[in-house]
Length: 116
Image 1 (cartoon, rainbow, N blue to C red):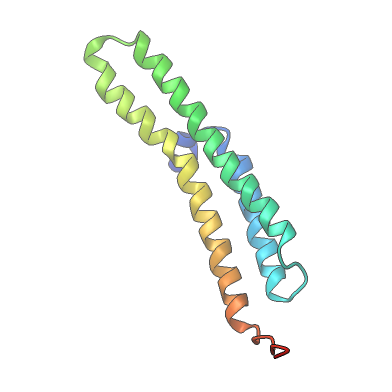
Image 2 (tube, rainbow, N blue to C red):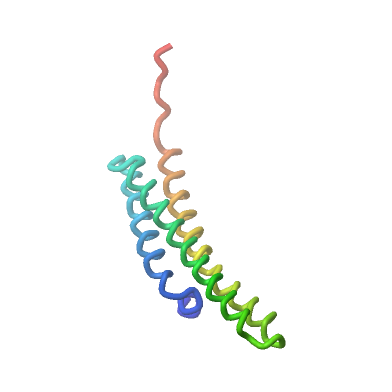
């Protein structure tokens, strides 16, 4: 896990923080305390932070590839791309966990009786 965060860079930390708050708000949603607004906001923050970290990593990788010797470009570029994608993987995992918690809440709620 430590290597995962080191490879992803500094943006992994805000992504993790937003994701943990997202999971917490999803758990509160199980109790009916927060249905949509906060989980939506923190879900978008988590995904945006992960995407931003990925894009920043890809930009830095491409800058390095343009300056690197031709013999190192392929391996170094592939490594940089793989490391950059850690940000997006973290964001997707956290959002997935929050959605699973929310799905449990949806399944536990009784269906509303229609007025027909």
